[in-house]
Length: 174
Image (tube, rainbow, N blue to C red; front, side, top):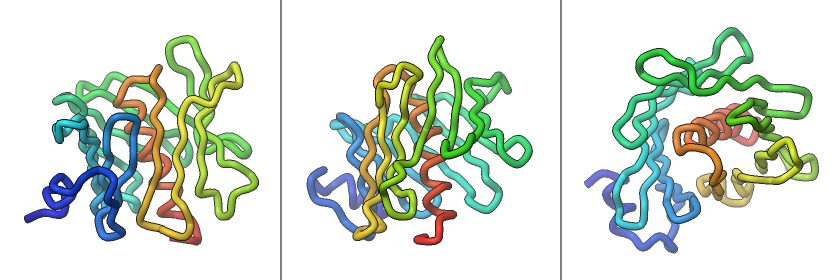
């Protein structure tokens, strides 16, 4: 039995350090090594991602459609459909993990300054509204808390989760 199957048999409220469970609105996200899945309440997989920390690339399957994410140059992060058309491009700024534009809004994924080791990341819209959050509590390094932005498609939310995971995996707290 795989770790993902074992996690599906557990109720969503019981977390495990071995198989990290992230609460995502009405969904669950489960990380197993360099993969994660987003699962709805009926245990249907909505999105899957396999990524490489070293190569800084990822392959996504969201609602049966393929996407790839990669770093273009040293800093620009790109999400593309499987046909090569770009969905979104994000770049880091000073104190901002990723900044991008989508559907007429500007978004910034920022780390909260008061947290230790940059584990708490919030997504802000250009009007100052906090629309999403990604947190990895330092006492429980295997557990993550995630709130996706309702106004963004699932593929962009999964892309932002990948950015947060890369940031956490490359941080000194490991």
